[in-house]
Image (cartoon, rainbow, N blue to C red):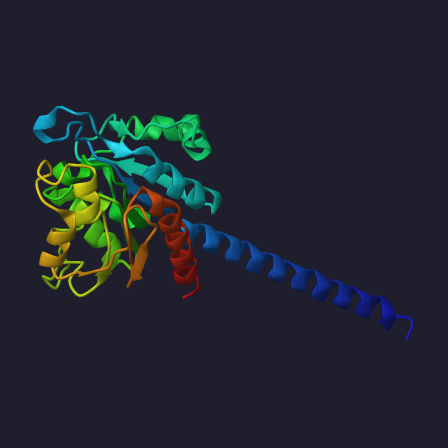
Length: 264
């Protein structure tokens, strides 16, 4: 019996070490899988810097980038930026008294990214789990007819990814077609900067089209709240927000939807 005990102890030790290695390996694999699942999110910002013939400056609206960025960045996602022309994106709504705007603008990595946006040709849709169209009036001029970005968005969506947009950002949705030939927004609940809000800012005759009308024309089920009220709609991985006041809620909705997708 005495001669057997040392042998049994060695066997038990081997089993214990083996068990620990298996558990450790599984934990490492799970961590790697979670990291792989998170991947990256692509933000689309406008290259257009003038409001039609008014000569008034415009661009992407800073809070519609910074507020979703803060939520998604803190959730562990890396954000890349693309614009129709690439390079430095013009900015509007530049208010650094907003602490989140200030946090974004003073982040050296992301300040560099938004001032050196990717061209659509530099984007691989397979790298992204979501695409977010930020607003700002400029988007109504250069988002709708950019076929390259529309194709990127369609590929991300059909790869079980999320498409989101806020305020005038849904201008980027109006011409996205899926592989079945239908518009992305067709039959889905959507919202965006409303006709009433466009009239309130006095630009209803300046913009090339009213976003609410165009989305309805494309088959969207348009929902809205009163002027400047936060309103977010989620429908089959399409998330849209009405105005700048909706930017935080859009960011939260994207994060929540991604969390659910990661569990599938």
